[in-house]
Image (cartoon, rainbow, N blue to C red; front, side, top):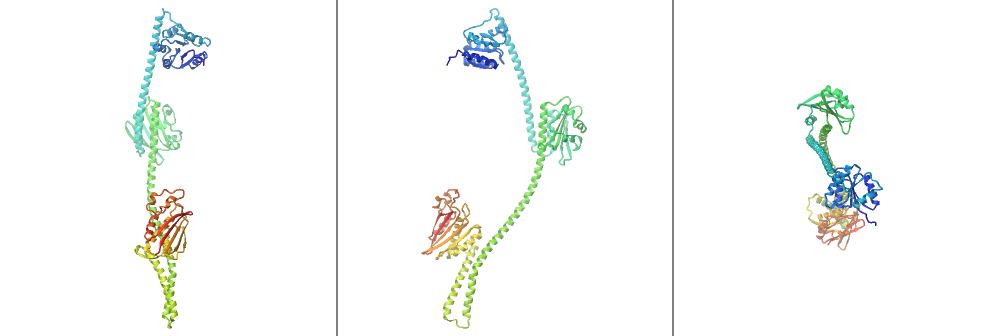
Length: 609
């Protein structure tokens, strides 16, 4: 890598000139740096400590002469060659550069064939000097230039400060105006009456703009005329009603746009004379007219705002903006007031509708209760019909066998010992069986009616109990509608001495488990068998399998607290299974459960002895 011939800093505001300097110096092997502004160049010179500084004299802000003076005041830069680049070729300009601390100067435009040679000469120690006889005069001229430049900068700073003060005052005025507008908008939020709303807007506009009078018209709810309000000399007065087909409203209805018209533009418009006729402004005045239109539908006309003040005070752009803000607020307030009135009416209508709906709902609830009672009566009617059909056979048997016995004992002839030995015992046995069936059904009905204590032990036919209780469970809705029950009752030995309510509750909990899966079980199988004094009952469903980790504790208390949540079609054990285990333990029975097919199979074992 070729070593650098030296580090050169160029302070030049013209980018084109800098590109030329950079290209020439880089080709000659110099390391170049650029600063487009004087103070930035001064800071870079202190950081880089270059071997030579090229300084443009005509810089924005501080001139090149002033930058040269600052550079020479730094001890570390006092001996660095400082070459002025200037288009000023007069002798006085060159001498001023030398007095300011420059080592010499290179005229602009730069001669590309001599530029590198000129820079090299100053790097090698060339130093231009002022004629000693003229040095004092040149120094005085330089001081005078510095003073004039400082005076110019001071004047610029004063002008800038004055403009800043004016801008600050305008900003403060604008802030006060916006604060007043914000406060006004807050006060208008709860206003519902158009007249009161317009009065507040006018009272805010008159002092803010120095108006002699301000008027506002808004469309009546009927849409046939406009109501008006005027504020003049601090007094508010109602204006005569203005029909919609009057000249000014008719013209505004056909006019597109909603921006304010003011000054000479309004004076020479077709709205001026109709406004004079209704007195919203006078001939020698500055006036402003702002139509109100629906923001969502510009064709809908709401009214207008008319302002007037002394003829020698035209509206300024800032005041025009203020008028637009107040008129926009007024228009939004009128729309909101109308909307709120409409909403209040809708709310009242909705409240009335809600009351009627609530009454209809209560009627519907009453009707639903009545229908439920009718459905309940229909289900109970079917249940009682089934019971009656089951009673037909034992009653028929009672009638028939009673007739047989009556015939035997009322016959004038002696029936004979054979008849008495065979027919009478058989008839008596039939009568006892029929009475037992009737007694069992009647007891079941009495138990369900709550008229008999469920804790009374008795001999129970488990098959009859299962059949009777399933009918009751279906009537009560424990067994869902549409679930088919398939029976396979094959137990020959099925009599057990126990409490009917225990086994009724046991069956109810088992059915609740069978029908409580994540998917409805379309069918339930109930099977029984007996062997050596042991009664077995199986209840199988298709309601989905149980989580394998929950099977072992299905009959233990508080299983719901330990079982994980059901996922992916799996389910928890029925909540009533622990109670089933407690009931069985009182009869030396036991229960087990396992997953079978698409559901579960619960098996109960009871000792009949």
